[in-house]
Image 1 (cartoon, rainbow, N blue to C red):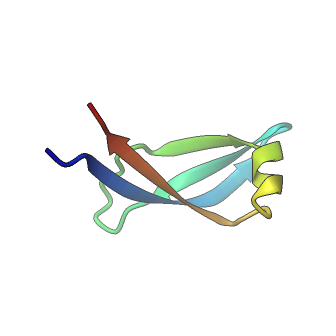
Image 2 (cartoon, helix red, strand yellow):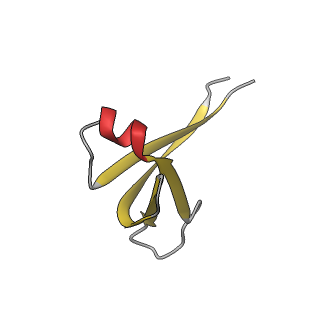
Length: 60
Protein backbone atom coordinates (compact mmCIF):
# COMPACT_ATOMS: atom_id res chain seq x y z
CA UNK A 1 0.00 0.00 0.00
CA UNK A 2 1.39 3.40 -0.97
CA UNK A 3 1.89 6.07 1.65
CA UNK A 4 -0.53 8.98 1.45
CA UNK A 5 0.55 12.59 1.56
CA UNK A 6 -0.75 16.11 1.15
CA UNK A 7 1.10 19.33 0.37
CA UNK A 8 -0.06 22.58 1.94
CA UNK A 9 1.02 26.14 1.18
CA UNK A 10 1.53 28.77 3.89
CA UNK A 11 2.23 32.52 3.68
CA UNK A 12 3.99 34.65 6.26
CA UNK A 13 1.46 36.44 8.44
CA UNK A 14 3.25 38.03 11.41
CA UNK A 15 6.24 37.72 13.71
CA UNK A 16 6.67 37.20 17.42
CA UNK A 17 9.95 37.48 19.31
CA UNK A 18 11.27 34.04 18.32
CA UNK A 19 8.77 32.68 15.80
CA UNK A 20 6.97 33.58 12.60
CA UNK A 21 3.29 32.80 12.15
CA UNK A 22 2.23 31.43 8.77
CA UNK A 23 -1.36 31.17 7.52
CA UNK A 24 -2.46 28.31 5.29
CA UNK A 25 -3.50 29.24 1.77
CA UNK A 26 -6.34 27.07 0.49
CA UNK A 27 -8.16 28.02 -2.71
CA UNK A 28 -11.31 26.25 -1.47
CA UNK A 29 -11.22 28.19 1.81
CA UNK A 30 -11.11 24.90 3.72
CA UNK A 31 -7.80 24.91 5.67
CA UNK A 32 -6.45 21.56 6.84
CA UNK A 33 -3.95 22.93 9.40
CA UNK A 34 -4.73 26.64 9.65
CA UNK A 35 -1.85 28.33 11.44
CA UNK A 36 1.77 27.23 11.58
CA UNK A 37 4.44 28.68 13.89
CA UNK A 38 8.08 28.26 12.81
CA UNK A 39 11.20 29.28 14.74
CA UNK A 40 13.06 32.25 13.24
CA UNK A 41 16.37 30.35 13.40
CA UNK A 42 15.08 27.69 10.99
CA UNK A 43 13.60 30.30 8.67
CA UNK A 44 16.91 32.15 8.65
CA UNK A 45 18.63 28.92 7.53
CA UNK A 46 16.05 28.66 4.72
CA UNK A 47 16.68 32.23 3.52
CA UNK A 48 13.74 33.90 5.33
CA UNK A 49 11.02 32.82 2.87
CA UNK A 50 7.66 34.57 2.55
CA UNK A 51 5.96 31.25 1.69
CA UNK A 52 6.39 27.65 2.82
CA UNK A 53 5.21 24.36 1.37
CA UNK A 54 4.67 21.67 3.97
CA UNK A 55 4.27 18.00 3.11
CA UNK A 56 2.38 15.79 5.55
CA UNK A 57 2.83 12.08 4.91
CA UNK A 58 1.01 9.15 6.48
CA UNK A 59 3.22 6.12 6.99
CA UNK A 60 2.74 2.79 8.64
